[in-house]
Length: 238
Image: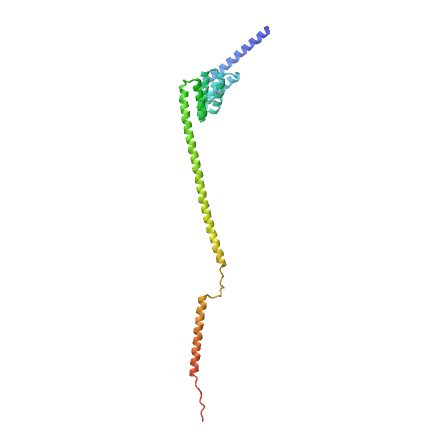
């Protein structure tokens, strides 16, 4: 019985020592946090959580130090876990509030809106959460409008590409027709009989024939003249 008592007493002292070390690390982290030494503060908060896995304060402050270092995704994951382990509604509201802030900075507006709504469910008089909720809704609307504009631009680009493609196809067809006509002209030219180099044209043949006829006519005229002028020798009687 006495042995059991000493064991329990030792455990109590051990737990107290762990708690003291945990609190000391958290206090040291808080001092660094106040100085803006967020990375150093993160280290001490992590050590505090290692000392006590159930250290809500250490885990909460760890989330804050991550947020201050603009590690919004990590901070959001930390606060999301804390929303499930918060001991009461006011603290749960704070966890949801900080979760909303982290998601807002990460531009995850829909998720941040849900977080702020949960913060208000747990603490309806949180005016800051209400303001942040309205701001997140406005940012979501702007994001959706921008996405719609980007989608419209994509559609316009697609239409432009289609038009360019049509114009290119028209141009290609025009070039094909032009090339086909050129090839056809060449084929037609090849089909035409080629005149021998020494073959005269019809006009040249006609002129030559007329010249020959004139020459023949001249010859006939000369022959006629010769026949009419030829004398007959009269035999003389000497």
